[in-house]
Length: 351
Image (cartoon, rainbow, N blue to C red; front, side):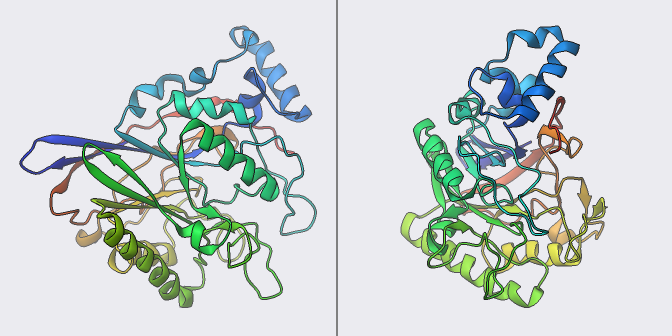
């Protein structure tokens, strides 16, 4: 997908590319020259290579993107990274007890795959950035910094987790914020999500999607951060990247094809209250549609549809991902292109 923005009177287009969850772990990691110790994924990769002899020579980082590299040629491209770049092997605890079962990590040197695809920004506000605890997150920050890939959505405290990244392209300043409704599902003594960053805890910029009583507070905090960023850096466009999460208030997977009222309400609030101009949604795991027919907030596809949930690499579509609103005084949204891609070859073994 590419949202095309044109500066009025100058005829210069700014192309923004958006993708969903990017997982470079599992079989992808094990097929690259540098990989993490992972016996389960290693065995799965060998079985895959036996069925596909061309894979026996291994893969280069540029090859993991298949035929969608051409669609990633934008002035700025943003995705959600769900495979920490770390050699740290200790997994986080799961809500039901024990260790988190579905985790993927990739060797820090495989960050080169993001560079090969011209990825400029990754959201770390999701339910996987702390899969390998704080050490895994710190390693990810270090790898992204070394590769020159910007990130937002996780920090050493609540303020830094909500801090945006401002990137420049064609004379414009685009601010990328990132927030997540997904965490680990565990609560601390105060009833707060254990992965939520606070004044003393490293974590992600978390918001409680299912308690609508808290929406106003979350949106107010984000709105203040947007206002401060506008005043300090005179940004042209504000993008909010949102991981909606794949489970509902009851802990069950979200019904395919439906947008819960809480999700729709919060997405509208991101525009009406927080001041977002583009909402980049991801992390649901299936295609959603609002079906509301509301002309003032027409959900538009922003990311390609998801591969099956076991796919190691996918770009999922989740609506409402883009709520078109008037942009800055010198820009307007010319159109949206939806280019679905899915690489079904790479399948992660379940632990």
